[in-house]
Image (cartoon, rainbow over all chains, first blue to last red):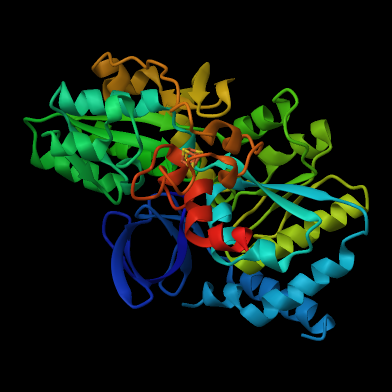
Length: 75
Length: 370
Ligand code: SF4
């Protein structure tokens, strides 16, 4: 139910809608709950609605931290 | 897929696991509740518990919306579909939840009820537009993640003047359930919470601030991927070791302190707090659920059709209630994996993949038997 996933916005449409790419599958979703979404953004998609924009800088920073933590363990 | 697979990397997971193992203090037990069903699912699916030292005990919480819905709520939906001839629209997860009289929405459908599985609230509106002569009821369930899409649908129905659309509202609130868990008399001992991912994208991290302040329990909001959950566990262990209790956010790529204001404003416009709501497992919890405001009463199926809620006890062998309070584990239920399986669920925790029993049945059963 609460499962949601990041999806890449590939096209903006009328009626506050957009087309996203979900692992190669194109899907029309609503942008009624988010602001200032542009093509190329990742959004978190849940039951047909974008819930939040993904902050790419934060995502990369989190991944870098994971790599560093793993490296410290000699992994 | 970008930003999914990255957070599932096995080598990084092993690195994080050894980092956690290095920080665990000998002789100390860490009892952490993952509130959210999505985390329960991720923990089981990726075998996260196996990667952790045995002194870290992960306790499933009540954050699976299908699981916490009591039987009487599904009964209301079935009555609307069977007795009132409404087209009942619902997300897939509720179709197989056992209701009274050995019924489910799926079985009601086989008996002639018009039950439609939808993917989005927009689908329910489309059905209402296409069938102006029929009543269309959307069975709305879910935490703060799923509430904003319902609000959008109600506002749109009002704007279009749709007269045959209404919502059977069962939206529930995460912080209220966390308070209830901590207030259960002789409840489980908890050292901290793994805070929900997508609920928090909407409500932000601020609503968790009472838990460290008033109960001394740390909360770390975690994303849904396995590395996120492991990192959140590490952050909790550090807080516990250092005697700190704070709200921390691991899921910074999607969660801010304030959350999604636009979504909050829409929810606020359409819904108000119920005085009380009955949860499976937690009993009747004050101010823990939403209903439509008077202004939108014509879209409230409970008022429109006068279908009142009637409480119904769970199946007597089912331990869902204790599992949802974190007091029991699925394998402690006598009928787990025998009479109760995902194909023939007896209780709600076996229905949704986020339910503790279903997650344990699919991924964890053989491991704990070994
Ligand atoms: S195994 Fe089935 S009957 Fe037992 S607690 Fe889980 S859902 Fe309920």
